[in-house]
Length: 253
Length: 206
Image 1 (cartoon, helix red, strand yellow):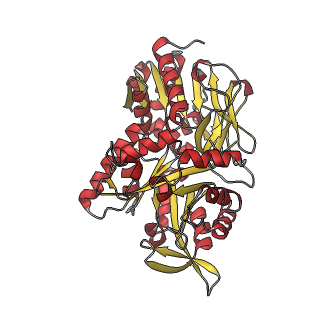
Image 2 (image 1 turned 30 degrees about the vertical axis):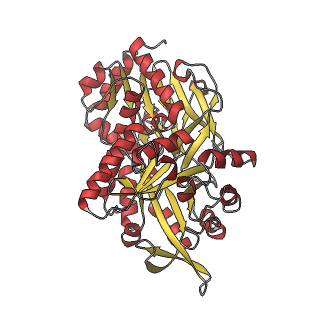
């Protein structure tokens, strides 16, 4: 049976993991993304997402080096996101060893990139990341770009459907309202998007405890759940979340 | 020496690194002669069936892979590479494959998420050197929208369930295919690549 995926995510800036990762602080290099990736493979993570939040050109080539080193040592799939805005960018990252690329703002600005990327490299490696925020007046979720700074006026559900039809292989859906709140994923949003598209949906934003994963897989109908700080700060572990879900009857590796 | 066939598609580095990790040397090559002379050949691939066959033809690799297979040395296709081993595919039209195993490649059909993405459990159907050390219900990582439908279902060595039976591992004489990504399936996948590497060194049992 196909299982639900648990995906730790970390931000990388100038070659280092940015957020403090408490469990690696002493004996190992806390800031090395490749070490962290290996750690999570051992811990039972199903996939990984590395977000490049570097702005500089030098940082970019450092990231390429990290992707290469991760590919050498990690034998689970990993996605790289951040600053990918052309077919050439996609090619470079996949060539360095990433399995998928995640695109957010660039896909909104240039939806053709989804189609071109899927045609050239296969649908499976094109992940469209969507940041959504609930708009009370409209009673709908709106797509935000530029790291949440710019509202687009687009409906998340409509954009997700469009991304699907343009050739995206997966949707990485982040709730801007829930992100960092630790009181659970946005279940109505996740469910609406998951039911609206024919491709897998990765829920993101809001994980605070293991029950939240259960909720997003059942009520939220997510295919995968992404989390960052809850794992990095050791509030729970991938193993603990997985054994809890297994006990509750959720298909888990 | 294992030759990983480079025809311009797919993430070859991961497969190469995975072989290295389990102690087998593999070279990435697009030279027909190097392919024919190898002890084992790995045909990787992501992307579309038609494009893949086009590139293989263009590089003179269709004949090279077929000549290699005729020498009774182990040939392993992964993901799209496995699908290429079959007779025909319906991916974006009608395409002819390498026809080393008889059967067709068809798209998942139904009201469920396509592609199948993620870890699925294996149902072992036959004992085989390629599956040595792999246990019933071990998990492996799949990403695909198309699946193979072999003429002789006995070639299916292991399968998974995704809205029906999905052939995960196939074997016919010295020709093998793996639909999932062993290079991304952690310890279980590495074990299978190690098995293949040893089959290449020792020569395959027919």
